[in-house]
Each structure stands twice: as C-alpha cells, then as structure tokens.
Amino acid sequence: MSRASFVLLAVVLIAVGSSIGCQQGDGAATDATVVQIGSTRTPGLFGPPAEFRALHPRLEECFGQRVLFRAQPDGRALGMQLVQGNIPYAFMSAAEYAAVEDAGQLTLIASAVNALGKTSRGAHLIVKANSHVKTIADCRGKRFAFGVHGDLLTDLLTQRALEEAGVPVKELLTELLTPPIAFEGRLYLDKKVAQTIANDITVNAGVVDEVFWESMPDTGGNIITGPSKDQFKIVGETVVVPEMVVVAGPAANESDIAKFGDYLLEKVKADDAVCRQLGVTGFAPPDKAAYEAVRKLLPE
Image (cartoon, rainbow, N blue to C red; front, top):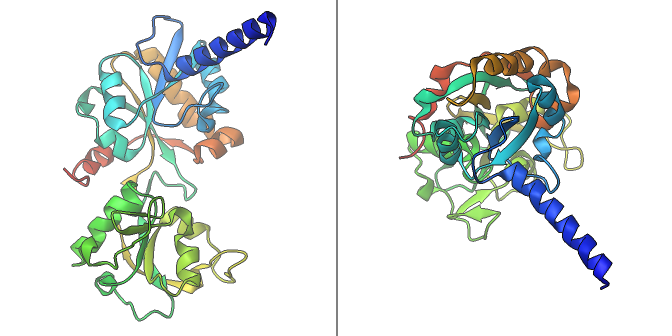
C-alpha cells in the first residue's frame, strides 16, 4: 500500500470512528450545542439507528441544534444516564422505563400510538381453530410458541398468563433446539408464530400481539400469503402494557421539553417516513400511572 493510500485509509477510519463515537457516546457531551437522545437501538455505521434516520433531521430542526443518538445496553443504563444529566432525552419501551431505578426524576413527554390508534397493546394466546384446546390450562404438556425471547408481551407476560392459568412453563413440552429458535427449553418464533401454528401439526399453541393479530385478514389464509384469523381461536390474553414512551431527564430545560412535545404530539402523525421507521402512527399525551404499573409486572 502506498503512503498516500495509507494516509487516506487512516483518515477514513478516524472519520468512521468519530461518527460511531458521536452516535454512541460513552461520556457526557461537552458541546452545549448538541442535544443527546438515548435509546437501546443499535446505532448505524455512519449515523443514527435505522429507526431514527428520518426523525434525526426533523429533531435538529425542532431543537435548532445538532442531535446525536447515544446507545445504552438496557433501561437501567438509560435511566442512569438520564438521572445523572449525561443525556436529556430518551426513547424507551415500557419494560425499559420500568427498569429505571429512579424514575421519579423523569418527565414523560409522549406515548407512541400504534396501528390500532392506541397507546397500549396486549397479546392473544391462540390455537388452531379446530384444536381440542379450549383454555390456557389445556396447553399443559403441549408445544407452545413464544414470540421474542425476553420481550415483555410475547415472552415474560405470556409466561405469567400461562402460570396464572395453572400452566408453569416447565410443564410445556420441552424444546431441544438451540438459540435463536429455543432458549431455556422454550420455542421462540418471533413473527412466525401464527404461520407455524397454522401449518405445523407439532406446534399446538402460541402467542401473537394484538397489533399483529389485527393486521391479519379475516379469511383466506394459506402457506403462501400468510395466515388469517379464521384459522385460529383465542384461548387467553396477556396483561395490556403501554407502548414506547419519550422521556426527559433533569438535564432537559422546560422550553426544549415543550418544543419536543409539540413536535411529537402535533407533527409526527403527518410524517409517513418517521412513523414507518418508528413503527407508530403518531404520539399522544402519556399516562405515567400506566408505565409505573409495569414495574409490578416484571420479575424481581
């Protein structure tokens, strides 16, 4: 490699490292003209996480400042960064918010609105339409498909619904597969739960969140186009939990919180690109009590 090529490569690597470092940022910002926003989303190579790419320039316009996204491993870490004043804002799931040790110092700005026009969702426990399984209790000893490992609705609260119906997860049919299909002897199929139940005679029951359920057609499901509601019956429900929330920490000033809230509540719903990437249809005023209630649902 020539010296010129080596220098060019070094410059590129430094630029990439700086970009990633700015987006992830392990330390507090020293530039007062930068607004930092935390999340647990995976950062992009040259910019913000994919979910925030359309939102990024909108927020810079909203604040009139540069906006950087800082990734944290979990809700507890996000909470620490917020409370300590290292970041002023964060996008958090209900489970991530519930993991914050000192949420009393946080201000809830807006709750996400899902495709059903709601700021919360539950999940349905389903079986084949012609199954002899009538209730959750009948799932004992059966092969049961969970959604995403560790997910609040399609894993943790689904286990809770089973256990409250008298079916400890240890009494489901044990899986011998390895991750990402099975964890801890349980089957996890993400968004393929309904399709698998409909077409695999060995999977007797499973869970789908209500937004996915409502996205399915009423009839006409098949292995090529996907499942339909008439192929299943609902035998149980999980607890309902709130959608993603945008919060501010003590480092955020009131005027900026007001600007951020106005943008989320009034303008996001008309921005197709932002809504599509975030998986929302807009934002609504938050109900703090609903998020605090999630704390009681999580395992100790």
